[in-house]
Length: 349
Image 1 (cartoon, rainbow, N blue to C red):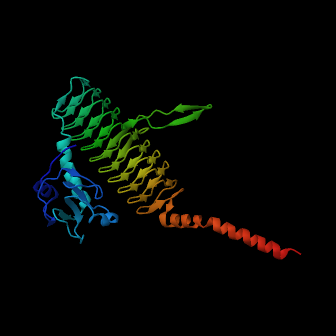
Image 2: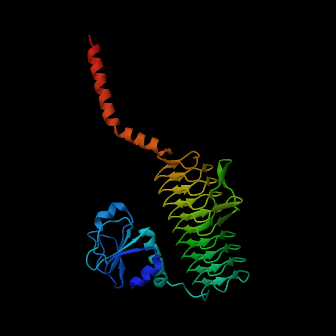
Image 3: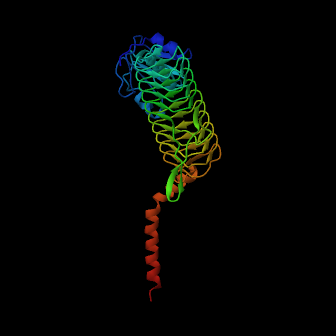
């Protein structure tokens, strides 16, 4: 991807609260990490552990925290900001608009729209999309190609849906959502009951409702409720390959990282972070502000503002202590073995 961004445009994007140090006035033509950047590139220091790489970087413009004390080389410019990572995000957001322009409003000739569906005249419906009966597509919605919108489903304004996404019957997608490639909203919840030795399916007749500004990652599945709703709160961001079970309620501004699984009917509060490959059993309550570390297995409800980890999940301080003691077990068993031998030799007649 090729682009050229002049310095004045960069400063316009990241705002006025910037301290400039050094001399580089040409346009940037690339973005790269500190270690791989070349002349003409923009780079940034988002993690303090890479601080030593700044002075070796060949990047022409570097976004740095305001407390960085080093000096730029010749033909190099430091832009010191409050949050370099977010400043870079603002620049990339602007570049993204140019590189991936929004398609024009209208319905592609190969798309099928049921006559009873409503598609706003500012929405864009891509090739081979299928929009079911009584569905509603709101203003400035963008549907890429090969998307299925079920009967009675609703997609609110400015939502962007990427290829091969399924929004099932009667589900409701909030404003400014981003549904990435291959995700499924409103698949059947996993519900069966054993009757006379056979597993009988329990019909799943509820829906999924997402709030505003929700992101759902590629190939993630959010199950419809058995009855009622599966709920995703405003501002929550869900990564790729996440499974959200039926009747789950996830609060506002949560983060669920890749390969997380949430069992049915669990309630997750606001501002919760669930790290990669963590599993949460069903019918639990996870309080506001909880942090669940990677690969944790949560089998009990968690009070608010706790950090937990391990299998089964416990408060992280206890989990870390247990892990520390586990590393000492081989030496401990060796000492016990030696003690047994010593005692046996003393007790021998």
